[in-house]
Amino acid sequence: MKRRNFIKTTAIASSIAIMPILNSCKNMVSGRIRSAHIGVGGMGMEDLKAMSSHPSVDVTALCDVDSNYLDVAHKMFPNAKVYKDYRVMLKELENEIDAVVISTPDHTHAPASLMAMEMNKAVYCQKPLTHHVTEARAMQKMAKDRNLITQMGIQVHSFYDYKLATLLIQSGIIGKVSTVHAWSPKNWGFDGAAPEGSDPVPNHLDWNLWLGTSPERQYKEGHYHPMNWRKVLDYGCGTLGDMGVHIFDTPYNALDLDVPNTIKTECRQPTGFGFPEKNVVTYEFPGTKYTTENFKWIWYDGEGAPTQHEDLMLPNNEKLHDQGAMFIGEKGNLYLPHFQLMPKLIIDGKFEDMDVSKFNLEEPIRDYGTEAPKHYHQFVDACLGKDECTAPFSYASRLTETILLGVIAQRFPNRTLHWDSKNAKFAEEEANTFLDAPYRDF
Ligand SMILES: NC(=O)c1ccc[n+]([C@@H]2O[C@H](COP(=O)([O-])OP(=O)(O)OC[C@H]3O[C@@H](n4cnc5c(N)ncnc54)[C@H](O)[C@@H]3O)[C@@H](O)[C@H]2O)c1
Image (cartoon, rainbow, N blue to C red):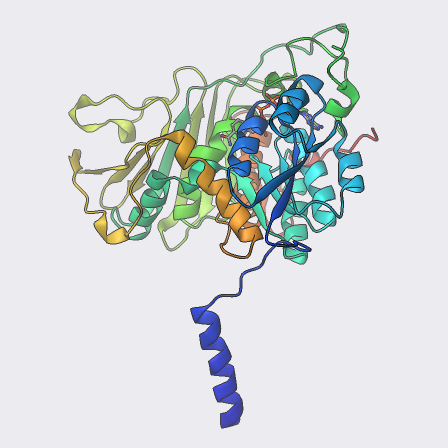
């Protein structure tokens, strides 16, 4: 290389190192982010409040298939345009919005996100990123191809204790990690057939739009909308998809994991309608620089979770928190309760103090309402070109794929499934049927 060119190249390289060029929202004008929100009841209302608390956000559009929820949100943002069909909203407002927030039940995450991403919008999508593995891969690809700002709604990813646990693990405080146990006693399972007959659809709900791309089904009060869709295979991902994403996020991130090689779920026989009420899911991953050669993640959910295990005995007979994770390392264990509680180091069966000052983290905020918006504000700042998202779809899609493989394994109780990540297929042909589902025209 000629010297002049070398100097030119190194000068550019060093200026990049000092002042990284951050991506920002496509077509964003005047340093403000015009947001459109799909699903504004339940978590959607929390998303709306947290996103709009950023001073540079203008809430421009609100969409919900249930007019009761839409009315409440509209009262809060009377200048926003309102819609019940996200497709109509996105088409009409293509040039008037920069970012789309998706807070619907899981089966609508990918159809709505992909449509918004095709229009080059920045997308904040609730967890789990998708309902199907193929959708997670499609969203990852589109975000990458179009270089879009994206963030999955795992707000605890930006919380103090999770960031600290990641730094502790990566600093080698317990050596290489061989196993993580994680648990939640929540039960988003349902043992029974699909309810028979139908109930009148309430005037405030558009049931066809709620079903969206999922198969046609009769409306039954209390079974699906709101919230209970989590228990049903066609719409949700059971407890693993609900809580596993949050609780496995830190181990996944800290240990720099990719997708697993094998997955086995211990649970009852499937019914074809609802998720099992109690699951123990064992994943085996290829080793990384932070793990032993083979690494295991074991997830326990449902009543009584976790199953008793010697790794989960706490010093001083302390009681395990309801939900959490335990990292098992060569030199000791790190216990991470869920959530807003300090990780604890356990060496030789005793709690040990840790010096965390060297990590230069901001002080912990022990108030959910103040700490949660950080993850949303990070997304908005990324849209403005001032920050980077820490849970973009490049990351979220792999974490979600991992979770969904365990959800599929619930259809094959006590059988080890082998995942071929390169070809996105199970070795067990019968399991491949569940990687995808046809979209209904609606
Ligand atoms: N990050 C978190 O801590 C957290 C917490 C709870 C829920 N969630 C996630 O948020 C999502 C929603 O969960 P929820 O508990 O709020 O469910 P919910 O059923 O209580 O609310 C869903 C909302 O979306 C609306 N909706 C449904 N289909 C729609 C469509 N096609 N277009 C527009 N609006 C539609 C519903 O009317 C309702 O207002 C899920 O993906 C869930 O996993 C995340």
